Length: 162
Figure (cartoon, rainbow, N blue to C red):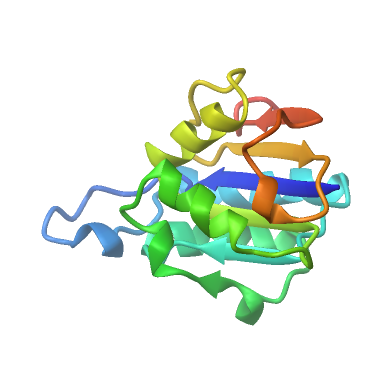
């Protein structure tokens, strides 16, 4: 079994229009929601083998806030440029390259590509709001086949649904 978590970054600030997109920080709501979502996963004893994050400040901070609640070492978060300004097909390609070793992987990134990938994996998911987490449990020995068969289970967590 493999478990994939697709995490849309928490709500970001647009207070400084001069900032480049990659440098936009989380706003106050985002700083509240990310630890809340991490705590929710921790209660379920979620322990990702790998957390991959977009290099954008808002995505990496979301990954760090969630990781802290999961007792995942912050220095073990892998920042991957391919998670920023990409497409759903590229994300799926990246996941399929993970091989067999990690059983549980968390990707922290952006819309629209995360929603598109989530919808590709399960038509039940049509939108990922900020800081939402889509969890897919997949019967597979390797990540190479992800997306070819329907997941065994799909759960969508949002900050509003506590």
